[in-house]
Length: 440
Image (spheres, helix red, strand yellow):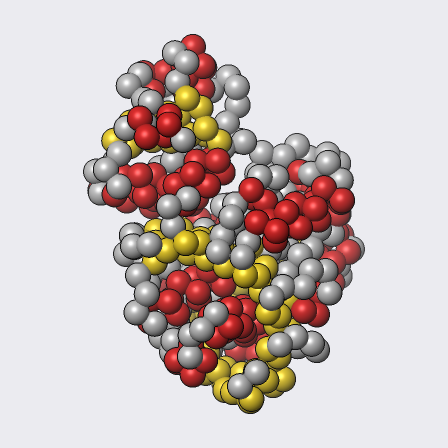
């Protein structure tokens, strides 16, 4: 770590990314000279500018001239001019995940990983700790109103962070406390094989001191477990009342009630994971349960961006991009709005995922009353023979939307909830539509 001590000027390539921007802010607030580049102007790049970070809107060699270190992601090509310049000048080039691991080393870590629910569970964990008078650093893969900088919060001696399992390398982190929300084979294509994928989780578990796992999966057993059918902490009943729900739990301290101000079976499970961790490591369980009283979901998680009580037209944005997330989201919409038709406008994310889980996506989409599916948001992947059109053709009444602009032609009718769903750029279209509806 000798070299790390000498690093004073750090440049982030693709700084507008949700993970990169949080890491850039951490370095900035800890006294480093930080710059970044991103050709895509976004809320995050504008925010970084506002707090004093130098942001370039194009990739150019001159951007890295004075840098001691250049931080990149796997998406950055070897032809990127900043990468080329860093190699030529012998500037230290660090992958984002390695930089992230390095900056977390001084702190006691509370990590959340798994296939589904990472951002929500991380934000719940941070929210609860803050309400329990803890002062954590927070690194979140979404925006949240509880964090002073949206996806980042300065703190003292502990760090709460979302740990992305989509690429090898996450297993090298060494958190004090770890929640694994669930494990499904969503990113196996990035690993050598299935054995490599699961062995990475096994390594992470060995690197962590106290682990919470989802008992019903029976894949790994932590020091404390949660579930519905099994586990040290079990969810035995759930009553949805509009956006709020009352969850009955069986715990080592007997039956407890959790009053959760956000909807959805999946969010009740996410909250249960946090209750399991915090009460198992010594926090009073009643105070932990109370710490959820003001919780709000992070951005693009069942986010109501438009709601007209006269026409009963509601627009909801959500980041769901796996088949299981889509299924649970649409079921939640049916619970929250039992007297309205649910219309889904879904943008699949990654060709590999669509190809692998086509049947599951079809089953999930059928929960909605009306179905629109756009072409895939590739996320740097090649088509590889996959197309959303094939899915649409096998669902009666579903409509394929080839260009996102065509969504604006949809007739928005009364007594409907329009769910804009996906991890790509469909959010931009929903925001435009929200503005149009607000002005009519």
